[in-house]
Length: 428
Image 1: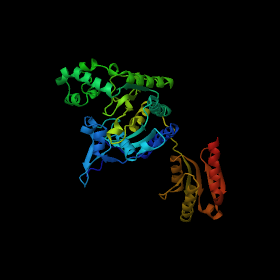
Image 2: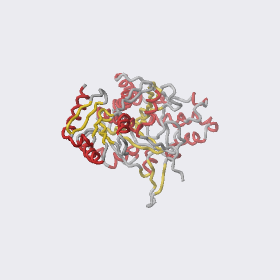
Image 3: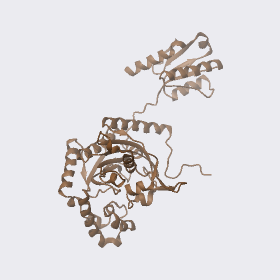
Image 4: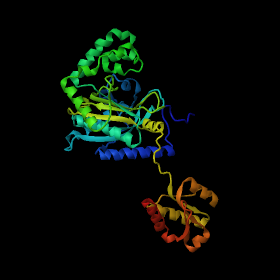
């Protein structure tokens, strides 16, 4: 019997879950500052959503999706990325008809991709992402990039590199597509089988190939920037201008094409330059996808967004030795010995919790000395000590673990006393 987690998946244990919670709460607060609202979509979609939305020629659709047939014979797929699902929800729920436009959304989603697991890249991965639907303003592109950079910076990362490019509008992209076909066709038989197929289906993705990245033809490939029409060039110039006004440094990389078919105009990636981070340096990536909603049956609606891996974010924090300010203390630990005392302890713990006080107690029948050790392990700010003599007198001993001061208070007033001491500590 194999009781290990499936390959490419991992358990998040309590000590690590606290980091996840801190990061997620920080991100949610930033999204609130930017006035983005949360959306939650199903874990699986009809396969066609990703075939049409992500693109039949992508590695995701061809090689990496977890697809299955349900009892009704319908083809369903565990979501491999978030944008297509959000766009589907946008169309289905007619969000394009809402009076407040554009629609600015964020999400935390689990994604599933069948690929070779490696550090920071799992078959079940967790992603934070944002999507803005309903605006073709280049200022929105800059805002989305700003949000992503703000997340990393407010969590303490500094070894970051933002890389941007423009894929242009449909006309520019088609001209560039033809130029790539002309350039790579003489080298067709020298390219990997995937790139030979890409040359027919989506030549831009040849530039994104990891197998052929050192082929001489890659270095001499034409640049998309040379094929931008005036409108696309003006759009890209505005995005760069807004980033400069925000004080956000960037590099232009003409070979940055991203791996999905729906991108046009702005494309970007944020990378970690921290020493020892690993061979795969990308932390987040995204771009504009003005035709996606239309492909999924909705009206012609512009959109832009990004996806950010939480696992890779935590890796980057470790690489830069950034310690998250996780509070591992508890407010109070109640020590009790004796059967009758135990009954009162159960009642008191319940009462303290009802009044918003974080408290725990022993559930192993341990002696008082062992319970004190437990209080130390939990880093309790205060310890309440209740014995048979105290119970008879209806009092309890309260010990401040920082100062060592110990006082006797009535059981009736212990909730107010503990609350007051905690409040006083927070005000210091």
